[in-house]
Length: 320
Image (cartoon, rainbow, N blue to C red; front, side, top):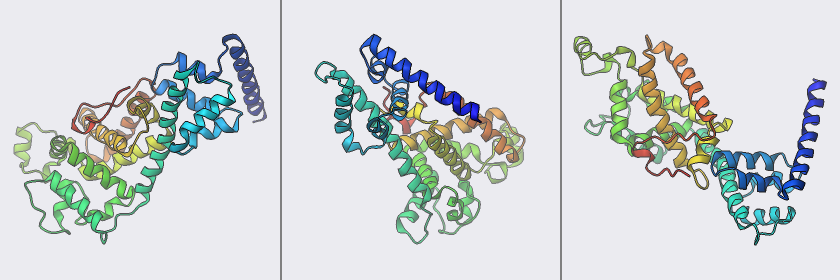
């Protein structure tokens, strides 16, 4: 343990010495070198974030958590601290502002997502009930819901006759994501729902299912899997794994819509992955999910990665 601590401080000391030498040789501070030598996107923003966070300056350390309205003033203070003339280096301020908007925006997005996750579904709340009924309408537009408490909810993948009990783990976040997918990408969502139906819940008999060569292993509970994929997206966000994606697709601050679009992408990809894996039964869900999670994390380790799907819900995405 002592050796590790000593090694940490030794490396930190060497890094500060290297930064000092580089500034003397190039005439530029680390922030300037990053902005001028690294292309826009995740590569640049993540390097800027690390540089600010690890700085010995309190101003730079706290700049990653300022209010969005204070970003412009913060950049002015940083330029003054680093003795950088904004008239001679106008692009630096612009680049730093773009990076800080993404960094601060990511932190705020975590707060927004966490707030939804912590809010439980309340059947006495008219807005919550309206969202749930809209989810049914978007997924089953030609089938009226006979009553609020109904076994029909199983047709879209809930476990019982009242979906509110299934939202306990992810709170309103699960419902928000499912409704977003069903509304913004209705055709694809309805197709995924149709494909996910197990033979016993399908309009086809067992003989017809086998005749149509539909693999029974495809079956899973659409809504429950949607809540589970919400949990996956949430943990990718909290861990910072989604920084690569958001810093590459959001030119400014990533928003809740960006998160929901990412959920839609993950639903698409998981459905395809489930079919490719061809599990024996639903009991293999955790194995398939974990394998899928590892694949997504591996993709996100590429600094140029952007989970930009080509479907209706992603039309608002902007590549940098």
